[in-house]
Image 1 (tube, rainbow, N blue to C red):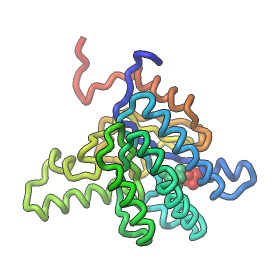
Image 2 (image 1 turned 135 degrees about the vertical axis):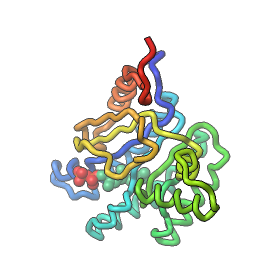
Image 3 (image 1 turned 180 degrees about the vertical axis):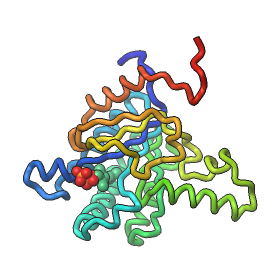
Image 4 (image 1 turned 120 degrees about the horizontal axis):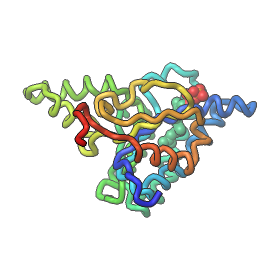
Length: 231
Ligand code: FPP
C-alpha cells in the first residue's frame, strides 16, 4: 500500500453485529460487544495508515426503536468504551469528538462523553468522531436553525459551517459493512461527493485487512466532483 492515496477522512456505517452474533447462535448484544472490540482495532489501523479523521456511526436517532435490552447494552458499551479507551487515545494523541444529540442520554453517560471530548480537545494526532444519537437529517435541521438564530443567510457554505463536522470537513470515503446498499441517514450533507464502499463483511469481521482493501480501492477511484475530467 506504500504510496497509495489515503483518504483523509473516512466515515463508517458499522452494520452487521446482530447477524454476526445470531449466525453463531448468540444474542445480538454479543455482536455489539465484538463490534466494540473491532472499533479499537480499526481505529488503530486507520490512524496508522495516515487517516486524519474517522467518523463512526455508533448509534442512530432511529436506534431508539430497538428492544430496551439491546439499547441498554449499547449504552453500557458506550460507557465502557469511553472510559476504557480514553487513556489509550490520550496516549496516541487522538482527539475524540461526537456528533449527535447527547442530551437524550443519562447524565452519567453525558458526563463520561463530555470528559472524553474535553480532555482530548488539544490532541492533534487524529480525530475520532463518534456519531451517537445521530441522524443526518436532524443534523441539517440543527445547522439551519443555528443559522436562523444568528440571523444569517442560509447558504450551502453556511450549512456546512454549522454541521457537527464543520471543523473536519467531508468524508472522502464512506464504508458500509453488512451488505446493505444505503446510507441510512449517515452524513448525507457531507457525503455529497464521498466515494462509497459497500461490503458484505459483517462489522465484527471487518478487520485490518478489510480496511486496507477499502483504502486500496479508494486509491483507484477518480474523483471529479461533478466536473469533466482533465486529460
Ligand atoms: C449495526 O448492527 C450496529 C449498531 C446499531 C451499533 C453499532 C455499535 C457498535 C459497533 C458498538 C458501539 C460503538 C462504539 C464506538 C463504542 P445491527 O445490530 O444493525 O446488525 P444487523 O444489521 O446484523 O442486525
